[in-house]
Structure formats: structure tokens, C-alpha cells
Image 1 (cartoon, rainbow, N blue to C red):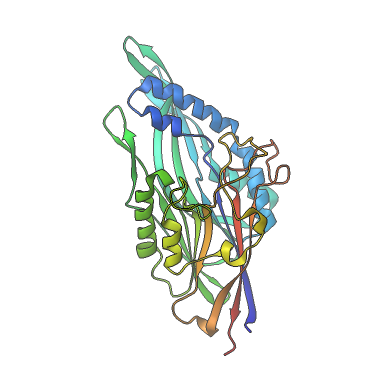
Image 2 (image 1 turned 90 degrees about the horizontal axis):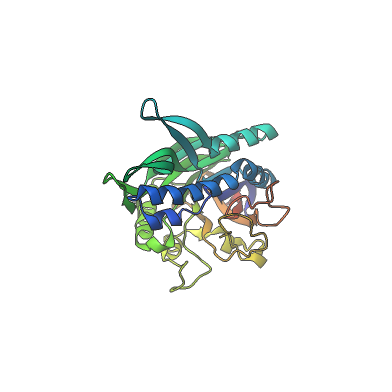
Length: 359
């Protein structure tokens, strides 16, 4: 029997950029008039899904689970600008940064957490208003979205190093009216740390969505072959992998990525611990307006995987799953003060126990 060692709690949460962007992708980026009217409706939804309100519920989840490390996806930053008619140039109007809002909510409560790493992924700007001059549409207001993945750690967590990067495999979303390519970029944040005497590597990521399964699989290959290697300790992968473990081949939400990760030696912490099993670990997805308070989640695409070290750890340290739970899913208890879900995804928390083999 292993000697009891330190515990480790990890939380993963896709916090949702706040609006359904599919209509923008459907109309494309070349007809600026149509793009502006479509993007304005999406921007209205983003503002209605007030992240300042949702951040309260998100931090409730962090406070309630008390994780050592948190992997967040879709930590958005929106910047707006308006056309200055006197100069003909756009001037900055407002900055709406999810990270800053979360930091403020954590600080207000006195919670001991800090962001230690983030990676910028997709960055794209669209018009949301304009006027027509003869046969030409002139944008007068722009909104730029930057999507990021980020890692938050509890003060005192022993971090040795942080790195980040983007996958080479990307999705071409379209071509703008000037001929420039607009691409969906995904990335990862890697943290090397120590938990007691054990070495550990954590990788937070967000892989491509299921309709682009081939790109997702290429990203997973980069993750497993280039990002993960290099540590002789425990490895923990966490994030939104967009590969439904509750589906079967042929289902729209299924991709081979989940199987490829487990075949690489990673253990699904939910499946290993079977915590809170009546919900089956389902984490996705609520409606884009976050008001479907009676909806049932039907996909298991957010994961915390772990893999024991290939070589010996100091004093024979090893890691064992000690429970898992889904958070932010109970109406009233898990919703925001404004009555919204905190995100279109629920959060996933996993607990581990580290122990040393006396032999």
C-alpha cells in the first residue's frame, strides 16, 4: 500500500467567448454590408451574455473546488474602434478583456490565484456598423476578437517553467475583401511544476471542432509528438478536445482524437474515478444565449487526462485519480447572478492523490 502524499486538484473550463459566430462564417468576409449586419447581431449576443456577470459564477466554481491549477479556454479579448470622420482613421473606443475581469473577481474575493501563462490563438476583426456611399459600404465601427487559452495557478504552486505555442494545423475560415486569409488558430500552454517531490507537466489546450476532424487530428498529433514529450514526471492534459467520448463513430460529435490520446498511454480521469457518475461527465453544450436552464448536456468533450511517468520518480512517487466532478451545471446553484449559465460548457474538476511506494 502506498504512503499518503500530497493531493492535486485540477480544473478545466471553456469559458465561452460569448456568441454564436457560425452566422458570420456562413456569410463570409467579402460582402462588408452583409457581414456588418450579421456581426452586429453576434456582438449584441456577446454583450447580452455579459462576462462580468458570468465571471461571478465561474469564480464560484473555482472557489468551490479550490484547484491547484486551472486551464481555461476561450479567454476572449474584444476591442472596439470607431471611424473618426475628421481624420479618416479608426480610434480605439473600448477594451473588454475576460482575463482582466476574472482577475478582478478573484482579487475582490481575496482568492490566491494568478495567471502564469497564455497563448493567443485566433485574432479577427469585423465591422458591426457602417454607411453606404453610392455603391460602396464604409465601415464605421469595428470589433476585434482575440481568443486565448490560459493557465491560472494557486499562489505557492511550485512552477518550474511555462511555455506556449500554436499548432501548425489550422482551418482557413475565409478571405476578406482585401484578399487576406482569415484562419482559425489553436494553441497550448505548458507548465512544468513540482507537486511535493513529484515532477509534473501540465498542458492546457483547445483542439479544433468536429466538422474539421482532419485538422483536429493533426493538432492532436502535434500535441502528442511535440508538446507532451520532454518530461520524466507525471503528465496531465486538460482542455476542450472536441472529441466526444460519449458518442460512437458516425455521430457528428465523434472524432478519433479521444482514442488516439488514450492509446498514447493517457488515462481519462473521469473514466478512471467515475465520480458523480449519474451525469456521465457530460460538459457540452448550452445554447448560445446561455438561458436554456432546463437543457441537458449531451457531449463529453472536455477532459483531464493523466499519464504516469515512464521513468522512476524521486522516492517512487506515483499519481492516482481520487475523484472527478462536473461543475457549473445546476440552475440557481451553478448559474450567474443574472440567471445565465457561466459558459456554454460546464467545468470539469479532477482530484489526484500522490503517494510513494515504500519498496
